[in-house]
Amino acid sequence: MKKKISWKAIIGIILNLVIGANFLISAYAKIPSIEVFGWTIAESTPFNWTVAEWLARIVIGLEIFLGLLFVFQLFIKKLALPLASFLLVFFSVYLIYVLSVYGNEANCGCYGEMIPLSTKESLLKNGLILLLLFIARLFLFEIKFKFHKLVSLLFAIIGFGLPFYFSPPASAIIFSQKEIKNKNFPMRLISDSTNYVTSPKKIIAMVSPTCKYCKKAARRMSIIKKRNPEIPFQLVMMGHKDHLEAFLEETKSSNIPLIFMDSIEHFQKMNARNGVPTIKWLEDSTVVKRSTYFSLNESEILKWMKE
Picture 1 (tube, rainbow, N blue to C red):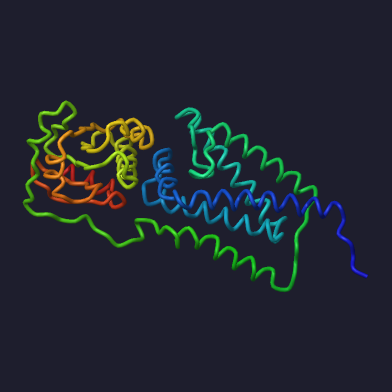
Picture 2 (picture 1 turned 180 degrees about the vertical axis):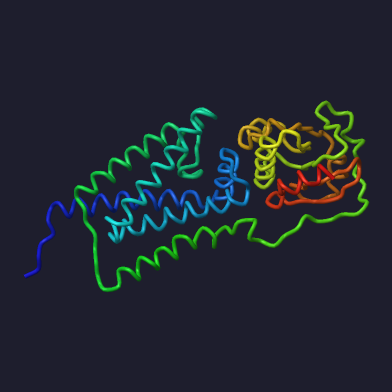
């Protein structure tokens, strides 16, 4: 006669499923905006860009791994519960720091862009999950079978591998800043503008307020500028001006001087009829390099500025 599952075990199973679902949803929601998640880490911590982008993927991988362990009721006592508790406490300490420095952010990114939660709401959510973890210890349930260790190892490989598969970090991709020789830039078209950056060396980004990659470029530049106020960034924009406020709010790029152009012809001359965003490194009116939004390297910029 088969042994019946006790009511205590049923509660344990349900708690594990709820906790596991939370971690899987959190990871799934972050993956589409994994770049931004890494940039947020770079903005709000001392970590450099490379460490931040790898850490973002490791954190998401850990969430997937924990979610799978809880859902399939594996290694709950020795691995899932301690790791989950540590991760949530770590997140909570980080959120308290963000709250003290930046205030109650409208969306701290705990569930990516899918479920916007403010910093305080995320702290409350973490508190509730920590409470569930404590209760799960009281109604402990886990499954053991012949190959449960091998299955758990497979879950670890899947969990930590997926974020890198869907969005490899820029530092793992071979790319270089494109060298350009003696390419003249029509600086006269913006040199009389109010927000014109007068530095002999500057980096200009040609953007549109509705282009998602332009927003990524502006966001990345705003973080680099925040970390290094001396870097002379310049935004040059063309498009519908009624989208400007939303662009600045989303990218947090109000710390970068922006010139909004009314002439399509002049914008095209400056952009050399390329698509947007176009990021150009200038010495006086000569374009010496071009970057994409993800290859814009903070350390290379600082080195170039000192040359």
